[in-house]
Image (cartoon, rainbow, N blue to C red; front, side, top):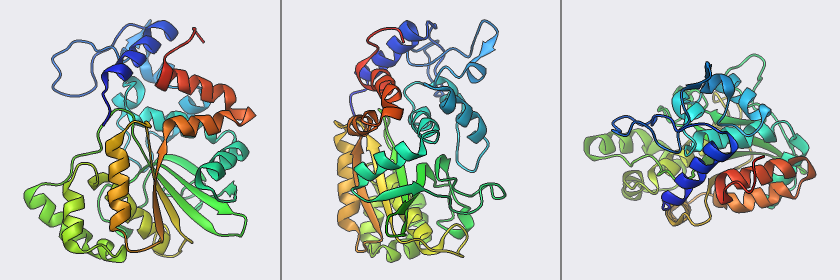
Length: 314
């Protein structure tokens, strides 16, 4: 977790200076504040936030979010369209634009992974299967009954084809200023340990250590992401396929020490090399994207929106 105030102010500046919009009501329940600076209004001039797509930095990202909101992932629509601090619109801003530049996207992912990524390819048939992974998707989840049996999914997922023909799954948990979801507690924790014991065993994580990781806020969500990633490597979408390996990444602000520590703890607990846990900083990701001519303007806009604040009205 990082100190959120600076980023709240950045988003409030973007809303005011770039979008020219007033503050909107909070998207989280229980708040007594009528408006907060990092939330967009529900509507302006007879146009709703969903219709306008104010929370997105390109038409590609806006249109992609509209197509995906009813997909198999867990999309919280109010946060998607109005909460400027949420990691969900951040993920859609990334995926929506990268999907329109697949060659540049493959180059960025090659730089980040250190692998010869030659293309993004589909897992399953996107034209006939709502659970198929269409090369690169936001808020993607496979059918739960074939994997960990819960609502776990990925903020971003991609299938990478390497120069030697191997297929690697990339799963990404995206964070901005938010915490990961809380770890399990008490009776729920005991049930989850039993439920996930076969998946922990596949990762060579003993039950005691698995219980500790599922309990802790810094590791619980990421470990569940790693478990479902590993299950997909071994089984494909529905148990009728397999992949050659996976990278499970956390994409977060460079200063997010808790995210770094969570990745490190899960990595240390693993006894298998099928899944490689990594931490990627948002700053370095945008640097790499900015080196691609097709993504340079978008990367600069993303940097101003999420990291530096607007230099001028864009």
